Amino acid sequence: METVEKRIQEVLGDREHGSRWLVKEALTILHAIADSTAQEGHENDQTDEQQLQQVIYSAAQIARARPAMAALSSAMGQVVSVHEEGLEAMKNEAQRLLEEYETATEKLAHYAQPLLTGQIMTCSISGTVLDVFRALHKQIERVIVLEGRPRYEGVNAAQAFSEMGIPVTLITDAQADIFLPDCQSVVVGADSILVNGDVLNKAGTALIAWAAHGHTIPFYVLCETLKISYQRWHEHDPQHRASNLQLLEEKEPQEVLEQPPAGVSVRNFYFDHTPYRLVTNIITEQGPLSRREIRDRAVTTRTQQHLLARLEKKYH
Image (cartoon, rainbow, N blue to C red; front, side, top):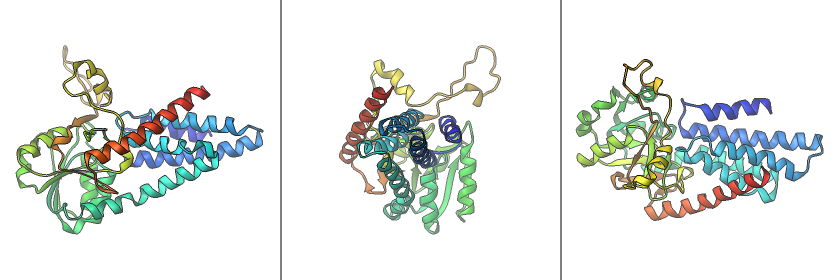
């Protein structure tokens, strides 16, 4: 269990990976926790409820880890939703979700195939986008990749695209509008799709979306349905400004500038908010989703999240 706890802490503090990797890691961890809890419970004569308590606590801990990454909390909520059937059922559900997640991008690529041609702009590093582009690399002429300040994850994305055999141009984030007129589309991943269809993704995504809108260039979001969240962005409502910003996960300013000049404050939000009206299509493993379909999925997610919260409160 000590190794598992260490892996949980790594998920909580991760800065290098996208939500796709984190979800797979979190599900693997929860499966391992359920497995070891069952074994230790048998050895220590723990009741079934005591064993469930340990797994539910870990699931709740992971679910709260990254507010902007809805897939983490959605995955944990789905696993816990079968808790009445016992620990084995939770293990099986974690395994089922893992297998489903592994095949999601293949289905995504099928739905995205008619849309992703020519020269495409992207930002950040999305495991989902990488997998889909890998499947469709022969029809993509070039990818324009933004560098992704402050951690420059766009550099890693550019290298990955190049290894697929796709010609790549790496640019600074501020050059996006210069290169957009030569692109057939903008394609990004998502860390969360909010209940009204708005998108949370790497900071800088919204600026590209507004620029693409100005150039009438399609703006596509590729993501799994697990990333649909019941949370809402309260636009034009100053009273909810603090809760909006909480979704964007502000990190250490030293990542941007280690020693700012006297009197200069530095801010470092990891994510930003892109309104649904700027998005041409949100494409998932179930196909393009309408706003209504997103809302219906979000209702299910909310029910599972409320259950997880109630169970955590019950056991702690």
